[in-house]
Length: 285
Ligand SMILES: [Fe+2]
Image 1 (tube, helix red, strand yellow):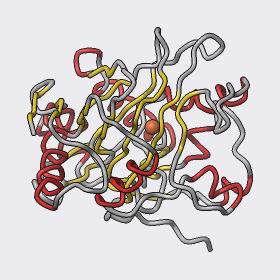
Image 2: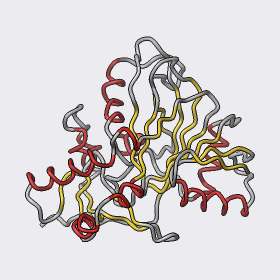
Image 3: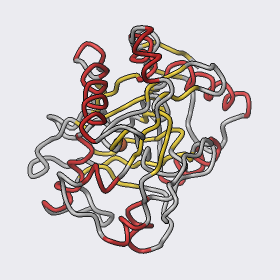
């Protein structure tokens, strides 16, 4: 395996490793370690299929049930298609583009779930010639840049993450889907269990800070988001077919840059691995 770092402490390009279910346990341990170190991994030229991707995903842990399908129909599926191509190969209509526009907000996948995601795995099959990039920022280096006073301010706080809140400016959420995802409380500062490195845990699903008024909540969460997503901290991934990208949802944010869905085909397949740190769903009274 060859590792080329992309920026100090964040992002790496990896060659010499084939991502499928045949990965050795040594290679898997090394992969887990470089996820902890770099947070964002780009593997070019992967000969991927859905079967290989699912087998590889299962090596890293439990695949996460895709929440839109599960929430609306109760069926468990493990793949989400990012882009505008339906399963039958035809181009989806504008409704799909509207729903996927939520991906253009900075977020951590599944932060709104009781047990959020460890990593997302996204493989590119068809990509636009213009647009459709994915941008990433490290929430670990963002935490490190805070002053000591700011760290002490954020360290003890808890945040409610809420999918219905984050989708409220975009499109209505199906009632069954909404009911499947009650708001969940996570610490504002997470700690990597292996390296003990701290990071902020925010993004579009972060609705409010426990014990703060709404105005105070939005002021702090919005300020942190602006601080952490400045242009100089962004790594932009320009997709090429055959790319597999893995990112650590515990300590990164990402967003899509948008593209002309009426002009280009875009088809990427995503799986996620369930994390092992559980948030708290406030009890109804
Ligand atoms: Fe995402």
